[in-house]
Each structure stands twice: as structure tokens, then as C-alpha cells.
Image (cartoon, rainbow, N blue to C red; front, side, top):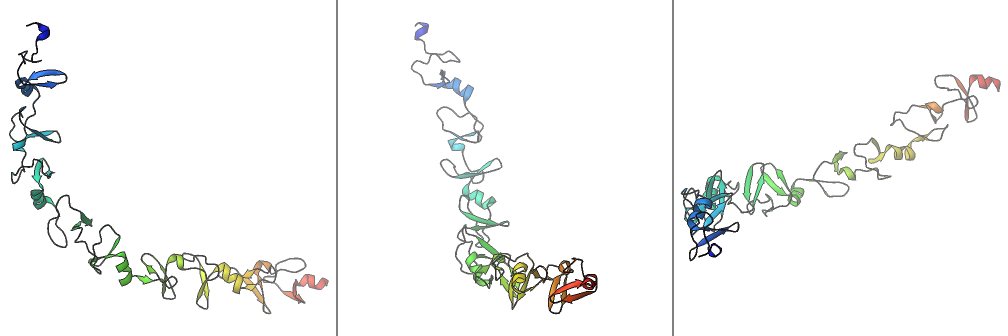
Length: 281
């Protein structure tokens, strides 16, 4: 037989004509050479996984099909769900009983792959994590812890939350108190301009809250000199004389503009004058 007609094992050079062989990287090998050179070693029995055996693999580790078993109960894991713990492969039942968390409500195991809820180190089956008030599953909805229970937001608002005296809706976070009544921060506004007053200086008249600007414009006395409001709320000083008021800086002689604060002065009709200018008159 000529060399061109030969069909030999790439490694041992034995003829493969009429024999079983395996191709690897475009080269043919007899089954014995292939197993010696390339076969994976079984994690279970440490023997080579022959060409006529199934090679089951997980994370670069290999097993004979008959060796691919649960490390605890020895049941076959072939074509079944399993879990890994350290270097051990376990069936779902053994893993659950040995390592899975227990449901805080029913005390049963939360099986791997099942939907569960977790909060502050506790676990629940999804169907066991219930609102303390309505007893409906909370699922992925928002909830609020209270004492030893958990409440869906609507139930918490009905049972515990204060009602804003402005919008009548529940106050779930923050809020302010004015005259012993609760308000949302965004609802506590100046009665005149509707500016939010939370964190701002304000005053009141007839139990209604006002920002300083609106209160000054509506109710504060007006300066005779500049006609602008006078308010002590912002720390301004003022002079009062015969039911008329002036800002301290506006209390000046009508003629020479010298400040009359702490000085003698005279009146001429509706005007005030320093004594020097009064003599000149």
C-alpha cells in the first residue's frame, strides 16, 4: 500500500482502516491514543473518561455520567438541577436542608431557585411576606416596617400616618407642625403668595402663616420717609412719633438731611427738622 493511501493514527502510526478513530485539530487518533493523550479525568473515580462514555462537565471539572452524583445523598445529578457548595455538588433538596435560609413566617426552607424576599438578614417565601394589616403579599412593592410588623404603604398611611391639614393626604416622611397641626413641607405655604415656608422665617396673623415680605406689604406700618414697610421681624429699628413711623435711617431733617436719631427736633406741618434748620426758618 502506498504512503498516499495509508490512513494511520497521528500518534502511534497504527493503521486506522476499518477501525474507530477520533479527529482532533484536523488529525486522526486511534481511541487508545486519544484517551491517553486527551481524555479528561473523572472527579468522582479519578479514572479517564473513555471515548464511549458521557463526559459531564461543570466549571472545568469532569465526571462520568454514573459518577455525577450528589455528594451527600449520592443520587444522580445527570439532567437535574443541582447546587454547588465549596467544592461539593449537591441536589437541590440536600443543599436546601443544609444551607438554604428558613422562611421567617412559616419556618420552612426557602428552596434554591424559588422567589424569596430578604430584609435585614431575614428571609421569606414571596407568598409569606404579608402586610400586617391587609394580609396581602407585599411582593416587590414598597413597604414600611413598624414595630415587629411590615405594612404596605396604603395600609401604613391609613393606620399610622398623620394627615396634612392642607391637602388631607398622608404624611409619610418629614413634615412640619404649626399650631399643633401637621403639614407636608411643600404644603406649608404663605397664605398670600404661596411661597413654601418650611425652613424660612415667617409670621402669622389671625392664625394664617405669612412670609415676611407679604406680611410687611399687607400689614406693616409704612415709613413716612421712604413709604416702604417697617417690620421689626427682620431686625429693623424704627422711630415712632405722633402715630407716624420712620426707619432709623429715614428719620432725618427735611432740609439738611442730618440724622435726628437721639437728637432734638421740631415739626413743621408734616415735616421734621433739626433745631438748627428750624432757627433759620
